[in-house]
Every structure is written in C-alpha cells, then in structure tokens.
Amino acid sequence: MTGNLPFVVVGLLFAIGMALILFDKNLIKIAIGVSMVEAATNLFLIVLGYRTGGSIPVYTLAGEVKRMVLPTPQALTLTAIVIGVATTALMLSLIMLLYRYYGTLDVREIRRLRG
Image (cartoon, rainbow, N blue to C red; front, side, top):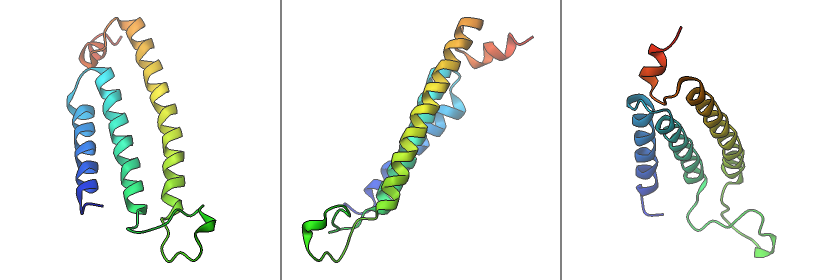
C-alpha cells in the first residue's frame, strides 16, 4: 500500500457522501450520498484487513506462509455489499413512490405538501 492513501480516499468518500446527505435537497442525490457512505465503509473494512506481503487465505498450495490477509473483513464486506444493494433498492423504490404521489423530488416541497 502507499501509506495512508486508502484512508484518505475513505475519508473523502465519506465526507462527500455525508455532505450530499445533509446539505442536498434532491432525493436521488441523497440516495447517492448514502451509497457513497456505504462504499467508504466497505473500503475501510478492506483496507483494515490488508497486510503487506500477505497471502490469500484460500491459497493452500503456497506451502508455509508467514503472513495472510485477514479473511474476516472480506466476509463482512461481502455481507455489507448485499445489505447495501437491498438498502439502495428500497430507497429508490420509495423515491419512485414519492415522485408519483407528490410529483417532485425536492425534500422541501414534499414537507410543505404534507397534510
């Protein structure tokens, strides 16, 4: 790895995603922000499990290997990806229903049209 570069990328992805969630008023952009935060979390888990010079844990023909890459963060990341896809699908379906009902994707308009 190149030092702290992956952690900087994680921080940037997380900051951009949170900025979209907190400051944007378009529901699609908010969903994109949530997906960016999920991607930053997944990248963070993978970076934590990386070891320089490590071998993959499923490679059994390598002989005696001194260092292996941690498999637990990889399994957690796969689970998080599946959960992230389901969350994104649910968000987008709710956004479609809100657009059909209110005719807008602006959060301020939806709050004002509340009965």
